[in-house]
Image (cartoon, rainbow, N blue to C red; front, side, top):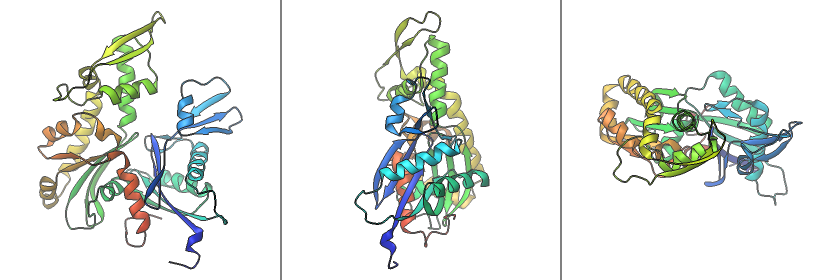
Length: 339
């Protein structure tokens, strides 16, 4: 540790499509929705939860923007403002000196060079002196306690807001992987479409998200089914208010197409997995992380599809963030980090 290391602030960031999580000193100090609210001049009005509360309720002078789409930065300026604002949220206010900033950021394993450059540039413009990157499935594996450097195969499925990351990890590297842009946001959009076509009711993202949380399911038959969820909104034809109950069976039907695409990607990765590692996965099972892992019955559906044990990790929402935090403390040790 250098003489002036106390002047360097080190943070780990899970820069997600749905939520951005910042870890500092092994603690989650920021966990906010990845959204900003701007006025007509482009000035930031709100970030995170406050901006999300405005989403879908704004007038002409305010607009809300989600800077990330499909796991990558779609709006560079908004992303920079959001990262800068969230770093400020994580900063203690009683510092005498301005710290230089060192960041490790989790990125999708299918990121292109251009997409990686966008993350680096946004982080540097937000004040970072050093920027390291780690692939999200690797971070998730570290976050749930897997020894990623062991000569043993482990499979991770990280279902976030914008991407689903499927990877086989061994000896500190990714042996086989696939990153598809089918994830939580697509589930939400599927529900919106279903409500519009099946029930003639308009719902916005937040309502669709609530439906997903309350009655979202990957199976049409569950051992412990949730009660029906009441949805309120305007009828498409009459604009009059309607209230209808939605069951988990309906949602499992409308999510079937997207989940089938995740199953196809999973089988593709398993086909490309070396036999020795396949045997390890058969023994260790497949780990589910990310917000999508909380979808009811998803572990059983994937297990039935692959004939392999599938387990939902503990605290799947924060697995990537915690793994990124561990990588931050071991930058010199982990050779899979990218500068």
